[in-house]
Length: 106
Image (cartoon, rainbow, N blue to C red; front, side):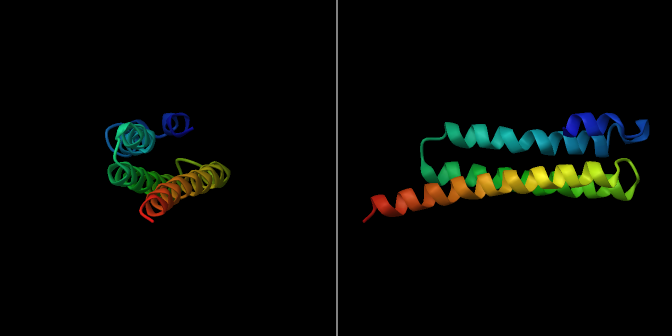
């Protein structure tokens, strides 16, 4: 979705906003994958937190895009709704890991 939206950004944004938003959006899933590949819950949680940070960074870039008129309100709302769903999933997994660790220490 982000790549498709970024295609519509002006050429002069190619090496700034377009590149930044693509990197931050790809970092979301990259951090999830790297965290999942770690075998210690604290490392996994840390990478999921980094993923969450990249998600909010991407949303900030989308805010800039709407402020500059590169995307419309509907596109922004769709991306924002998706980001809320992703945030809930990431939070849920972090909570699951924390609770699982706490239960195993009883």
